Length: 85
Image 1: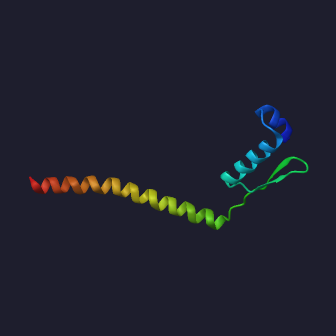
Image 2: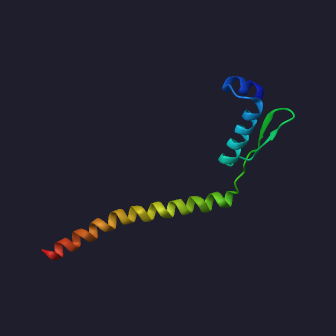
Image 3: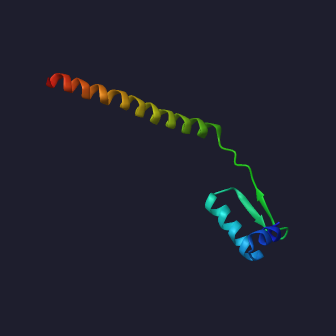
């Protein structure tokens, strides 16, 4: 596989292997390179359902806060302007 990539990318085999290794590392994928067979083995990353729910709730909380803030601040500014008149 890497030899095909090396030909297509106009790189040496060892350069392609290093490039793929750095790509996997930088993207934080759960994968390993089998140098003997020249393949990249990708593993599925199962995220804990509880962690997904917690992250979703954190995102929902932040969006709700931002929405409330965007409604309240103009209303408070309008109230203060009305008092000043």
